[in-house]
Length: 189
Image (cartoon, rainbow, N blue to C red; front, side):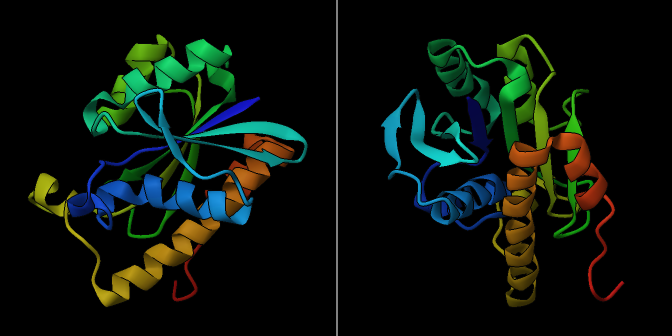
């Protein structure tokens, strides 16, 4: 049994922003696996999918980014899912736009949503799929902004790679996925 969490903020005004790449990637995975429709439970929008004979819960917390851990904790406690079987997809300003890094364990990297999850689970022992949205001088304004036409193409490709990464983690483990996706270079590099 697995839990895959896409981080973002609820509401139309945040729907297509950089901060919501976790939601967008989880939506793409849900479409790809023909998961159930999302419904509101556990302080979030949840769905269930099956992949490689694994039962997978999908969660988009509706608690806002900085307290995402509360929704994660509710679902983890109810289904008795260990942190080792949790995957969190989130934006990362320390990565260039569209870059993906898979990480297991460690700190929050300054991401308040990840910090909230670590605090609520009382453990950093979960998988993170970090999707780059680049850093700007006004971080808050930047992560809550949308993408230009050119950036949208880059982020759409990153979301597709994010879905592939999720599948590889579920099928082959996070180490194999790290070896493949952490060293990916864009076509123009």
